[in-house]
Length: 172
Image (cartoon, rainbow, N blue to C red; front, side):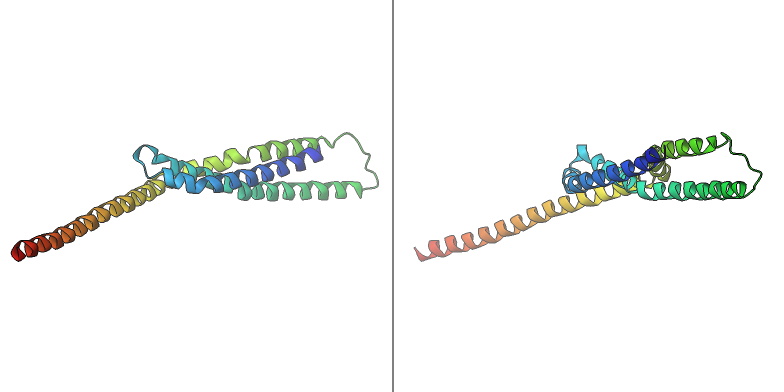
């Protein structure tokens, strides 16, 4: 059972690393897609998922610290009981089995708890909305600036063309 307990922690850490790599690769693609109106929510969803997966380690560390403290207290109690010469061993070690079961279930609940932290924060929605609006304003500004530059270039070419035409007509 202790092996399953440690395996659960290793599984969570491995999945976290894999998912963070995948999310990091997809991040620039999601940012590029998010500038279009219909896909603006994809950036918010990506930030939410990334932060949620990133929080798996701190939540797992808190659970590990809590379980370690409980295990130390259980071992201290066992040492105290075993130091008594009148102690007769019995099947009263059932709490170790319960402890490891709680640890295994706890480790597999880490993603859920991290998701609750993101949901309770609620700030990611407005943050993502602001990032999307800023990106859209930047694209619109570049588009408007490009139109203005082309209009200026067109006016300059038209002005030069008009002067050349005028000079040619006067020269005839």
